[in-house]
Length: 442
Figure 1 (cartoon, rainbow, N blue to C red):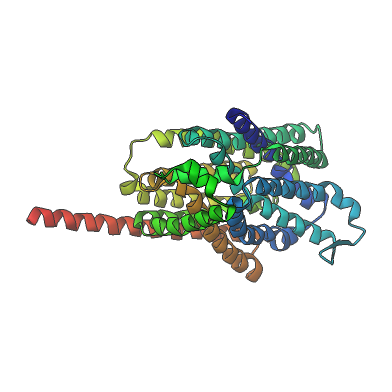
Figure 2: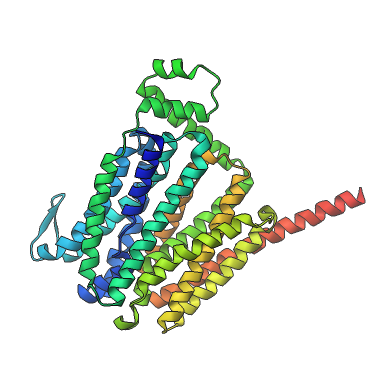
């Protein structure tokens, strides 16, 4: 298949798999239509996503290359498909006891199973970003990355905008959103199946090319076996781990990435629960709120990339100030009883996270081979999920805090992150002053 056709197909798959209009109103549907209590959703259902994502991430990361990408893409699509099968058909089987691995699944267990599948889908998304790099030449990596990421944003924006239109104008109910999502997830499975399979010899040759091998690539590939391909993958993995974490700058930004992503996942996972503390008639604009996030994030991202700022010097200050603002936004959300205030705070919070992530990526790009971004992202995500699991276990499972009290804790968390990076900036500034005086005295 031609290169442009493969790129079009993977981008189409990305847009379709993100077309899930249920998501902005997921809590409203589960809480108000299915009569699942806030406590049940908050403490027994939603945490399953975190644990499932954490457990599935490492196998997904290791198996994506070993299984040559496409099988993992199909698993991602099937996981999303399974989620919406439960949404659409689960109600008809609640009166029965459904068997899963020999265990009877009742009303609540089915939604725990849904969250497990959702965690699998999120973890296997790594194959979506990895697949295209095997199918296009290295000179096209930048444009391929832009297209594949844009496809995700387009899918989310269109689905959330449609959800807002249907619910806001009372043209459809929540079950209609579920059915639309199931149809698009079915199409996603079909598109994933249509993607051309990656041949291990092609993947092996791409890895040799990316390593700037000076040997005769054609003869190396022809004489190699699948076992040689796996050996190269795991040898690269070991070498890349060493290359990443011997750099203090990369280590510092990785710490920020893990700390910020931990709380970001928590906020995204439980914000609808916070909105749900207000009367149902106030929560009609969840769709447009979620749609505005990628819409505002794109220009903010582009502006940040054009700023001529030494982020090695000023990055700590920006991250600290950003964390202080995010702390204030979360505290305001925890105390507010006006949905518009909550919406605005949520949008600003997510845009700040997007800006901070862009700065982190731009800084890392100066000292890290672009081929190592996937590995670094995977490790940082795993650490973030481990921290989120600990946070969930303490705040939700052990202390059983109500959702507004949880957001006060999350606000304090951001303050702690801000203090950490203010301290790092102070240490860096002090060292520079000492070095400057030493040179002056000399």
